[in-house]
Length: 497
Image 1 (cartoon, rainbow, N blue to C red):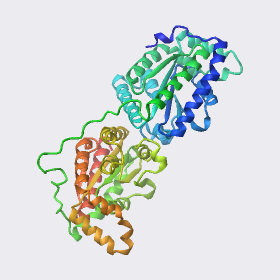
Image 2: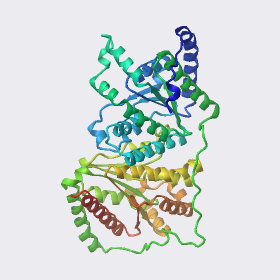
Image 3: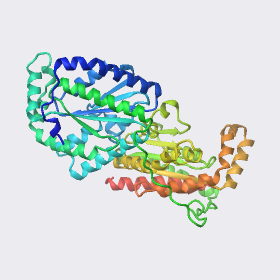
Image 4: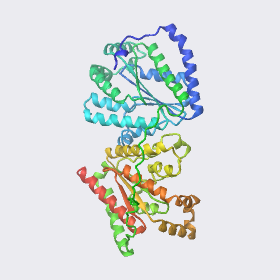
């Protein structure tokens, strides 16, 4: 994999000085055309061996391009906030919007690479992490991002020479640390691990470009041209450089039976049963949230259902059992301009809770396969591929000890109409009823089909859907609380608490 980057590539100084002005002008022009179009974001991943000069290349690109439209993110020690969340959280939250360029050096490759070199990750664990990276990059590409990945390569001899040169000058000696020399002694390990990482993550949509970094002139010129070529190709091709691959939706059953129609919506509780069970369950939930072992967990609750299904009321019965400092309720509406400029999961990733906390979503990431699908707000292919993207998102959460609970509150059309009429007649509830609610009601069958597909495609062993009969609000609230308590008890038992 690295053979072509070990040939001693070099560029004469006068050739470099002749070519750089032309490259800078073309690169700046391409950047500004992307800014003006706002159709994609550029994500440049810079990685390489110690001493290869990734920092120097970043500084050079900031000099060549308009820095107002460039965001730079360097790997650093994890903060407590980042340690409390899935590994990809810190990268999701800093993704650039469309029109901007994000430069990541170190990036999401640093931890898997270092983990493999220092034996913190075994082969199977590395494969899982790299699979997550591939799916992450695939989603970014499918959402329109341009990903350019560059590995700056040095031989072991070249690395030693670079470190010695830096160390010999007072102006640059500070850049060489004991850790750099320690890593140099592990060069063969780094090389093997890097070959594995690059081989497993170089895809048609986001390939790696390996560049020899021995001669700075050659390295700088090649990095600039690589980025320019990718940007020019994207501008020529349009929003996506590759077609989106998406599975066909499942065929509807030939009879009329489905998971929603089979629910028994007549289930109910008497007022006395409800008044007895509700406080007991709230107390049980409160006690679970204060258990010592709960500090190792976090909880994500996602509520979906037709308009007037009782999501808000159910959420309030949950939050009354919790310390207000330990939860956040996230009402999800139409995306803002800031959110539209990024992949759709971005606005949910940034609300992923830290340990010992709850994130409660009143509507959720499932809007992509429900309202956006039914209303045609996203291309059909985007809605179809969202199923596996959502499953991958939830799997990332679960792997980080986040309990994911998803509730669909089901009501009948007749019950929804009754609740709409009641809202019309109650002054302090009229704001809850909009023309949009009446319009959505006319598409009941389309939404029902979308819900059934959603359950079939995204109800997994680690994050199943809980279908709640909600014609009776008391029954629904008690069932939701019972499910949360039982699931948290199982999760605490699994970690020995």
